[in-house]
Length: 242
Ligand code: NAP
Image (cartoon, rainbow, N blue to C red; front, side, top):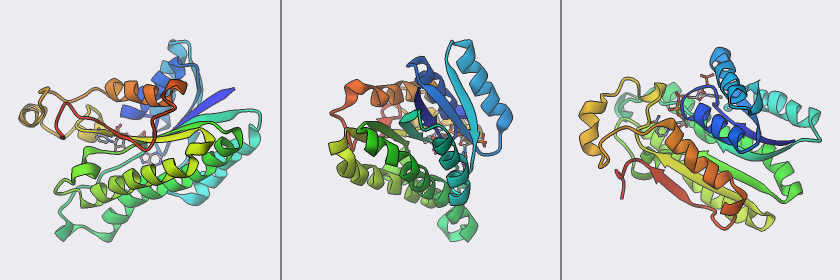
């Protein structure tokens, strides 16, 4: 069985990615941290569309939990292969650096940057043995240009962008590609409090994006046909960044 792991697959962009990868024929491991009900809704959506998957709870930023839950799954399913890894789980805790608490810095860095490390290191071992893999990291416009009030989030996403480029060079010979997708404003719980009417003047296409528009690009990077593209960062932001 060919599998795809999507961290933070319970809601938002992650849910749309799970649906996309299931439609491509993958058995999808839908990771979540707290929200089992939402993860089950993602799973039900896959089933409705004729796809398949399962839910897997772990905190990407907790090394022991990742080792126990994900390492345990890998050890118990030696006949299955995780061919596609989407590092999507992320949080934001926006505040000016002047007022930022240690906890707010650490939480955001730990989820995006350390989470990338803990999960990718585990999944990569089998990809290296199989000489095939697709790793796609969901980063952000904030990690490319930096945004005020998001020093922690910009640092975390910028770190993952640099890690994407470095890892791509380490594993290219093994037919493993590593790419990043940098969304702008996408309609999810993360952007719920933002005023789209006010912000759309900043966006050339004049609207927030849909999670499915990000998932479409993930499907492209996850495909076997994208094998000559690695270490890239694709912006999906309605033309905001140049
Ligand atoms: P969201 O709607 O807030 O969903 C976040 C997802 O991440 C949920 O599935 C959540 O699981 C999971 N998650 C959070 N912390 C986790 C942890 N420690 N371990 C495992 N799972 C964890 O967010 P979203 O808007 O879909 O964002 C998805 C990714 O895109 C994030 O990396 C975000 O930074 C990035 N992004 C989003 C936007 C945007 O405009 N929405 C723009 C640029 C980049 P639970 O359901 O269990 O809480």
